[in-house]
Each structure stands twice: as C-alpha cells, then as structure tokens.
Length: 469
Ligand SMILES: *Cc1c(COP(=O)(O)O)cnc(C)c1O
Image (cartoon, rainbow, N blue to C red; front, side, top):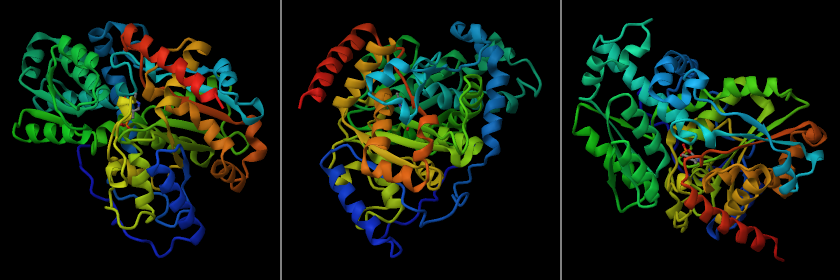
C-alpha cells in the first residue's frame, strides 16, 4: 500500500470545453484571484468516466484499513487511556445541530444540519487521527511481521512488550506538516515506541510544536510553507533506511485510513434514522488542505452511497489549491502548470486556518476525485471565525478555524446561482426538505483554552462585521 502516484493529466486547453463552462471558469478564476468566496460545480464530466483514475489505489484497501483499526484496538486501548472506554476504537459522534442550523439561518425546508464531530477524535484531536494513525499502525504492523515479532492472529498487545519496543525504538517515523498531521503522526509513533520527527512549516502554531516536544517528538522548524516542509522531510528520510516518511502528498495508507470513516458514519446515520437515497440526498461539506482527508472520506462515502451523496470541499480564499487543481484537471486553466499552486494565480496562501494552508493539492486525491466530487468552494477567514463563534455559542462545541469551513456549505449550495443550478439540474429541489447537510468539523479539541478564547473574540467581531450592511 506504499505505492506512489503519477497519474495526473497534462494541463492544456481542452477543445471539448463548452463555451458556457469556459465563460463560467473565467468568472470563477476572477473571483479566486480577488479572494472572493465562490462555489465551483464540476461541469458535466467531459474527462474520463467513473473508475478511470489511474492512481493504483484499490477499493479493497479501505476494508483492510478498517480491519487494521480493529486489530490494533486492544493495543490502542492500552497505550492511549482516553480510548479505553471505546475499546481502542477512535471514532467521533454524529450530532444533530438544530441550534447551529438556526444560527446559520438554514431553513428546515432546505434540509437538516448534522455535524460529524472529528474535532474531538482521541489522541490527535483532529481528522488526522484517521489517516495519520492508520499509516503509523500499518508501518508498525508491516515491520513487526517482517521482523517476526508478530504473527498474523496474535494479540497485538505483544507490540507493547519491552523487547518489541526496544526494536521499534531503532526506527523513526518522519512527516512534514502544518501542524495537525505532525501531531497525529508524532503522538501515535511515540505511543508505539518509534522515534518521531516532524518537519513543521512556518504557519504551524507554537502550541502544536510545544505539545509534540512534550511527547518526546523531534520538531524541526522550517521557514517555508507546507510544501517546503514536506520536501525537507522527504529528503531527510530518503537518506536513512530506518526512517519511514509519511508523504501527505502521495500516501495511499493515509487515504485508506480516511476512507475507513465511511462505514461507521453510514451506521451512525442509520441509527439516527437519517435515510440516504434518491429522495433523501446527503450533502457533505469537508474542509480541504492537500485533499487527502476529504478525498479519502469522499471516496469511502461514494463507495457506500453512490449518487445519493454529494461531496463538497471547502478551502480558504487564500489557499484554494484543490480548487485550482480541479479546474486545471478539467482543462479550464490554460497557460498554468498541470498541477498549479495557489501562487500561480497570485494568491499568498496566508490564512489562520493552518490545517488548510496548503499551496498545491495531492495528485492522488485530485485523480481520485475526478469523478467523485460535486464541487469546491472558498471561504474567508472572517467567515471561518464567525462560524467558529456561532458554533460555540449555539452548540458549545470548540473547534479550530480550519474546522469551520464546512458551515458555509449549505448557503453556498442553496443560496448561490451555481449551487441552485446544481440542485435544479439533478432534480434535487423537490427533495430538499428531506435532505441532510453534514458539516465535518475536522479539528480543535486540543486547542489550549487561551488560544480558543482568542479565536472566540475574533469570531465575535467577525460575526458582527459580516452582519453589518
Ligand atoms: C489536515 C486538516 C484538514 C484537511 O486535510 P487534508 O488531507 O490536508 O486535505 C482539514 N481540517 C483540519 C483541521 C486539518 O488538520
């Protein structure tokens, strides 16, 4: 499962792009360049058909990831006491969010708002508990099987014996991160007895670095952006055969770990009495950085729910890397590189949403989303803070700015011409009262109280500013 991917199509003007799509693309690019929030609906698939992505990623890996989480559960319960109550399974609740729905002025005739509360995931405090921990577990398992310290069918708690931990301590896990992936990988690797090394970009928060160091993780700070931190980590790891590098821009193991979220969510939806079918559409709004986490989840959900689930990615107005990657993939950004960065369209990648401050998207995620993604939208930092404040005031939930990006989704879909056209063209308007809007809150429970208070007071003034005429 450690294959890398190079299936990205050539960037070029596409002779098959209809005029109205091309005109829409020009207007959208204008909005992107001027950092105005906007929604882009994937035009009718003029490129490829379902399943044509040539990434090498296999559907079976999603089930394997689920099974791996099960095998490791008894060990995790032992290593991370906060997971003991759930038997070592790291999951988040599905929450009905009636107060937040009211605060967002989303009328019930447009559907019902739910939250997938990954901001509270154990160990990592973010969605990275899914992909990041999965990759560390897969590395630990592969290594222990190869070195015959573990046999298939064993109780995985054997990995916590002093003899095995002494072997693990010779190995290192390294990663480049804006913060949360580093926290997830660093903490999980340290729990399992590996050395851990996290390459942090300039936008990573000081408290995240401090927390990692407190766990015995080696934090290496880089002056550059996320992509530079990843490149530095990759280079350092290549020089050392005992180092496993978690490659956020290419990793299939991360992707599979995220995709494994789909089954538990489907079970939670059933349990909550939420139907998903032709007359009950499900709209999912996923904050997007490099695209691995939202991509994996969208992949898993599409596997389970097919055309009845509609996935939208949300990015900061200064960091719409997946947005431009997708438009380029559709042949709508002639003159730009095949995998453009946000700098290529004059943006600066400066945002308080540190989890989403990424200049270019994952090629694996872009390729896998080619036929699975409904659309992408952007959101201002001001709106992120306003929604963070609204969520705390209405539901008492503590999230970080990145995790608020999903909450402008329903308005983007139901309240913009592009979103309304999407609903109309797919015959969804009649079903909106029975529809479900699911905002994925991707991080925040580990944010220190004083940091959170600063978020809140900024959110309060942002909310007031957005209300002002
Ligand atoms: C990492 C992260 C995301 C997005 O994940 P990607 O794989 O980078 O797209 C969203 N929200 C938070 C809080 C994150 O840390």
